[in-house]
Image: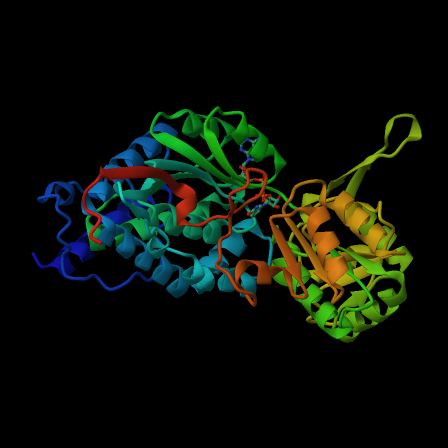
Length: 497
Ligand code: NAD
């Protein structure tokens, strides 16, 4: 049987089994099948029918998903670095070629964000670093040669958010597998269906090209129980969680090493040395992206009193609509539930999930106003204690607060960031302000004079990842994040000079 026919038959079998198992066959485009890869398995792997086991990585049971990933890690170890390179190539190519279909699937399932940006987030997976990041470090001297190599852990247990399900999953596979690991995903329940479709499509193509099965597995119906089972499984060596405070806390309590890409509430400070037009455009670009779902997105602005009006004028000139106080009050009532504090004290506001990632028109309706078609963002002047400032609200609305000085701007920013150490942004050409803000905020990303996405190599220098490890300190994740450094020492010999 020719390689092409064999692949075709596998596709059909996979499709039928997928439909029977509840995960619909993806209408995806995969790279054309290459000549049959010599994967070194002597036909053993090919003898098994993928689809019958785990439906190309999609598992009902967490323990089975972890065990399959462990088996896959062993296959990848045997297949070597060339197979890792191939896997990275496949994931990047498929994320791009399926961007329209998968972007729509994700939006249909989660109902948050914007289609154009859902598509773009998949097209840029090609910017995530791969195997080239794993060059060993060498020491050479009178006593020989020492090599420090970046080696895999085995299986990584990963949690993905609802805000960017397939992009996070795809970028994680690139980083994790480039480093020689396999991965098991416990995705967000409200974005699990699209995630399973992508996992299945990746596995089909990876099996066809490399003979390796189940390099990324996924728990089809994720729950707190499946999260606990994944974390507990002996094959899972480390965790990568991308999400809010709850899951970060839960991961840190498992006893396993957890790389945590946690929540943010990025403040922006603008002073009188900034270019107002450039600042306004950058703030709009970042805060409106995917309806402000990005964890790095501009969430509140502190503007120096002397330029606050100019900044707001520039925002209005660039298609953003300002709310009156009455409209702001109406929107706040709809977007938050305020629980009064004890004895009439300061209460707590929790975000109404119905408004997260929704289009500006939905927010405008709640504010009792109409806005021109194509409006990307709304804004209003608020005080520094307003729920829109304090909470990570993830809506296309931006609160702007006046501050009297650099010191007040920095102090307010620090307060709003809640010590997440995630992202902060400044628009200024005053070296003192840039330095003070950078030192005081102490965030993982600190962006000067650009939109938030410049912090991930999109308009600034650097590389991309959708998992920015903030409380645990690994930073913008990359293949080295998922490696163990091992030292190999040759005493007295092999130094050739
Ligand atoms: P979320 O915290 O609701 O969910 C994230 C994941 O954690 C989901 O898979 C969810 O099922 C799981 N989860 C939640 N609570 C849990 C618990 N107690 N135990 C086990 N699992 C639990 O987050 P979301 O709404 O999907 O995503 C938005 C949040 O993620 C925001 O706070 C955002 O800042 C953050 N985020 C951070 C990064 C980063 O790189 N640092 C990237 C994207 C999103």
